[in-house]
Amino acid sequence: QKEVEQNSGPLSVPEGAIASLNCTYSDRGSQSFFWYRQYSGKSPELIMFIYSNGDKEDGRFTAQLNKASQYVSLLIRDSQPSDSATYLCAVNYYNQGGKLIFGQGTELSVKP
Amino acid sequence: GAGVSQSPSNKVTEKGKDVELRCDPISGHTALYWYRQSLGQGLEFLIYFQGNSAPDKSGLPSDRFSAERTGGSVSTLTIQRTQQEDSAVYLCASSAQGGGNTIYFGEGSWLTVV
Image (cartoon, rainbow over all chains, first blue to last red; front, side, top):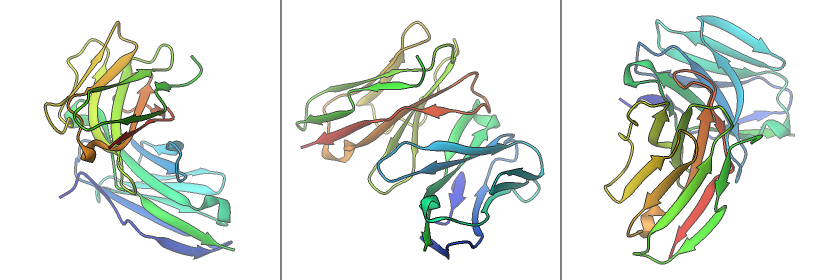
């Protein structure tokens, strides 16, 4: 089992729709979870982090965490073409000294 | 500095040569990471420095790769006897404490081995 797993996509949604991105992880001791966005040829940039079970909202973005199911997701409401990018899930591996492990990323395409 | 600074931004080297990549983290950040990203792939963890602790080198792909961090600040990633499969972008990131804090990336060093 990979440490952090994401569907590679591409995920294609129409403009204005909700995009749902999913991530599972294997370390039950993990405490911190991050979503990064990466445009082609650019470095990853932080969108959100979440530490507690439940939902965390920031503008059009909502992160959802379920530690019992070892699952974290990112919802993007009112998707825009400018949201087209690769979304990377990252998990802090508490039981491995706190290093941050990334998933392979999900490519999102928002069609006008 | 204001952000994570990496140099060189681009490097083309001949197979078999050694290369050094430099990272200057955000001032005051104690944790520093190196990742590698091949074309169209995700981020592959290489090494993690946290304060004065022994670095986590578990991601280094072979003994041709090494990294050091001097004075708890600047880090250098060295690749000896480069191979074509080493071609990738090497990303450095830093965070205030590590262990769950947000990490911030530099712009990367794009390495091409010909």
